Image (tube, rainbow, N blue to C red; front, side, top):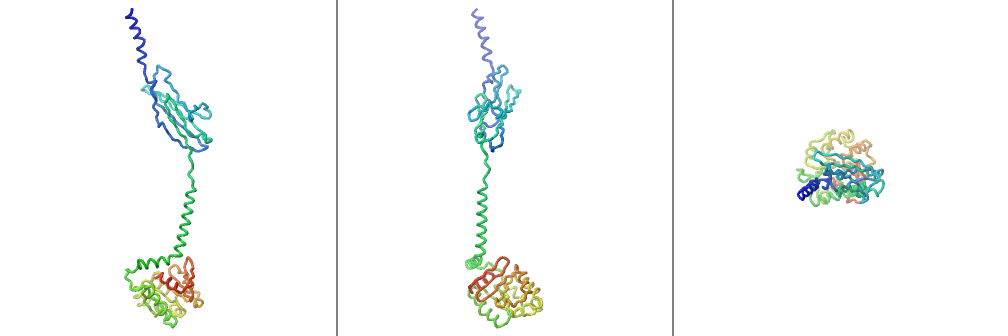
Amino acid sequence: MWRSLAILYLTCITPTKSLDPLCNSAPEFKHDQNQTVMGTLGSSVILTCTAFMGFNNTNSDCKDPLDWMKDGTPLTNYTVYPQEIEGWYTDEGHIIDSSKLTVTLKDKADFGVYSCVVRNSTAQFNIQEYKTPSHTGAVVATVVLLIVLTLSAVVYSKCRLNFKLWYKNIYGDYELNDGKMYDAYVSYINDDNDRKFVNFILKPHLENKYGHKLLLNDTNILPGAEPSAELLMNISRCRRLIVVMSQSYLEQEWCTTNFRQGLWHLMELSGKPIFIIFQSQQQQMSQAIIQQLKHHQSRITTLTWGAHSIVRTSRCSVHSYTSTRVHFIYLSFFL
């Protein structure tokens, strides 16, 4: 009898020990257990929680649902928080549960931590507000940049003469090694006033004070409106061409008959020739010559020379000066 009871006892407890422990195993989430989701007010975000769980067909308690919580409070209103729940079995005797929670971000309170809970395991989804980047900084930076560029342009236009002269004084002329013997070839008419201006004013100041070397010529450089052999030879030895365009100079044949063609020759022979016009004689110049000079002002430099002022005419601006010293500073700038 005792033998039978012992056998019966063993027979009863053996099934209990052989139960599959998968029912009590921790689930395995198929995604990161801590996620951050960005959203904006008025939009909706979908939180997807998927868990891989052990399952025992003999125990219905293993069918654990996926529950959602918001900041530790269970979500039971499925109208406000609609869910889509799916589940399927695998061939290895496991179950995969998936739940999609739709959260509509109507106000600030809808942001926060949402938890997906199954078998005491939790996956958290932290919904944070996505704030549109502010363009204020970019706008301010753009305005500041425009102001800086504008100020730089103004400073450059006002001080470029001083800068170039400072550069030449410190580092020397960048054209010194170009093989030229003279800084400028000066063409003028052998007239009493022009001769005094060139020999006693222009040449002494540019050579003695500013260190330029000039080659003077008082003959007709364009006989028959064509470059003379002397002009071609001398121009090749000089960096610039200066024409003292007085009223007497304009009485030469090439100026009266075909100034346009002569001007073209001078522009071809010398890069941006310099024309000095006396202010007291400017009214006597013909309109045809004035129009030609204006038409080619991008390729030439015109200096109006007066007793108390100098005006440079260009495409951009007209500057007036009240010092005779600036006559030579400005002229030196172009040499």
